[in-house]
Length: 205
Length: 205
DNA sequence: AAATTGAACAATTTGTTGATCATTCAGACT
DNA sequence: AGTCTGAATGATCAACAAATTGTTCAATTT
Image (tube, rainbow over all chains, first blue to last red):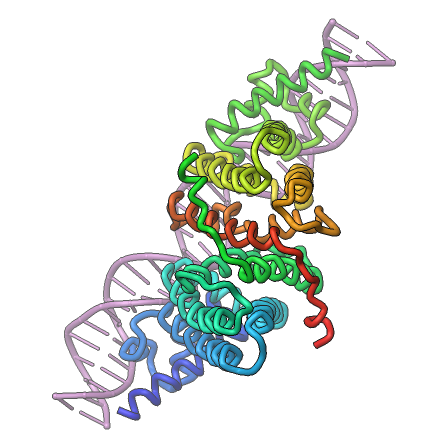
């Protein structure tokens, strides 16, 4: 049992090593196998495809980010401050990753093509902590009470989408993006502070 | 003089016809020339490159949209309603275009690659009318006074970016996107209704 | 029996060749 | 003199062949 998980993590580690260095496409199953002292065929007893290895890789990385998010959500500070810090750190880590090793971007791209639902899972996971912050904000009186915190969390994600997609801002610098994000957060947090009347006028008109 | 502009528009119209039907890549300069009863070389007296034709095409289309935006901004209705209508119609036209003729998407993609600043011009143009709406909202008392309406307009664009990029929501349906946009607009408009304290805590920390 | 291999297969990528196309420009036409 | 053409050029694209690579599985090893 421990054997099995051991070889699995061994394969994963070898794959991470190679993929981070040479990229996903340029890493072959045969190479990963050789690094682990086994045949390519044998990898398939632990991962059912190459893309599955990339997914496992992303899952691991994501778990770490998620633990930081949990710590942030449950740590000290007011809800608005946490909300700012949450989105700002998301922007910064994405940007830094893009800068330092572009290989990770390739993995992200392949994954979003081959495993379309994966990104959704990530966002849902992130929302858990956004909801925590929102609820803290409500109970502290910084945010107006809300019917469906998860929906509001979705809206926060939608409104800050620009700061998540490297492809979109290729041309923009981090300071410029940070300033923009601050501006958007100012607006959104101001919005959260007042009771929202769900717009029925639009439907009626 | 009139001759010159005449042939120019003739070339442009022939190009639009073909590009809309066959797409940008599949339309050749020789074909456009033949449609106009001239040689391919001669087109270059009117457009300095093929991509310039696409740009002229986009400029024309954009001017029409812009006139509608101007009409909307100066027409009747409260500022918040106009703001909703503005973004909603942007989403709807983009989505419909994507659905009806995917050819236009090809042109958009080529343009954003070859003429990176073009999209910025479009957005700046759009902001003119967003600012008009914002200022109306302030004078009517729906929105809190703001130092820099153009900056706020930029933030509105940033926060609604998700609803502008077809590539991003490939999987989402129009009704779902509309509901999301309404949610985001609710938040943003609520934010506009209260005075925003520019966050200096972030810089200090 | 369980784990592993390596040959076989299918899919994908890469390399190559020929054609097509955007662009230029010297000269013909008006 | 100002328009326009069509051949020349270099870049890009399409199609096909060869090579590489992901994946499977019968045979082998442990």
